[in-house]
Image 1 (cartoon, one colour):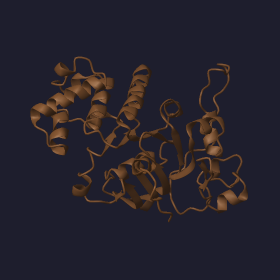
Image 2 (image 1 turned 90 degrees about the horizontal axis):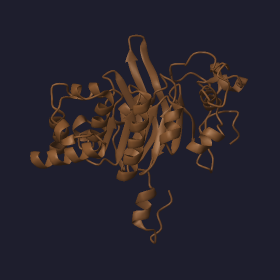
Image 3 (image 1 turned 60 degrees about the vertical axis):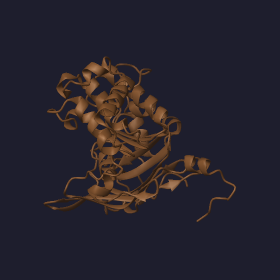
Image 4 (image 1 turned 30 degrees about the vertical axis):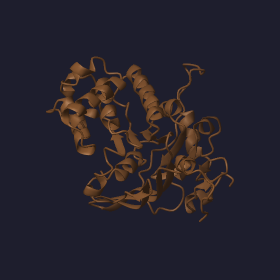
Length: 336
């Protein structure tokens, strides 16, 4: 391993070093018919100040990756591999160990805030509890910090509305409360799992702009899970494309949209409606059905649906080959 030169600026090194390093992450679930692999050998890194999108069809393993890193897998789930957060292993740690970083140094915004907010507690109590638990501040100070955070996520009349219950907020406002709760302790790492799915289009745009602004303000590393490439284009610096529990492609956002390399990425982009096309033109689709990740099966998981496949694609699992331009693709048809 190369060592850092003695003359290197420690602050500069810390700024460019990954805050999260995930290597060989595999996730399996025990079902009545046996063990099923949902994520199979995923590697990626996150750095401060960047927003990374994790995109793929339903069942590709996107949300399970975030849940495993947060220690929130279902009871029948098992994760293996490594996940270093600020140099500390967080995968498969005990709840007590994870509670030292969850909610403070790392936080998560869930898809449906009503599944995360307690309907029987006022918003004020739920927000101040985060601060008293993780930062040890008094209740009066915690309330003032919470009000300022609600104002920061653009909730009008925050001082009055903080006393309300979750059901007294609209869907968009509840999502803003969830974002405020996640950011109260100024985490270095923020996960967002389909944060705009349940919202109408206008509110989606507002929430996405809010997330982008707050990511810059807090200089946090953000990973956002979605199946919506429009969200990726609007919000992210880099994208990870998942299929069948494996990474098909990684690249800076501009490169993915202007020069996709993996056939699956090309298929996703081709299936997006375009304003410059005739309204009578049929939407393009990827043939076949998404394959549930089953692990250990030979070949590329996308091969059964790939119109460019060759014999090798069904026999040999492609490696994720990295290029010098920050790109990577797992495809036998992509030159190393």
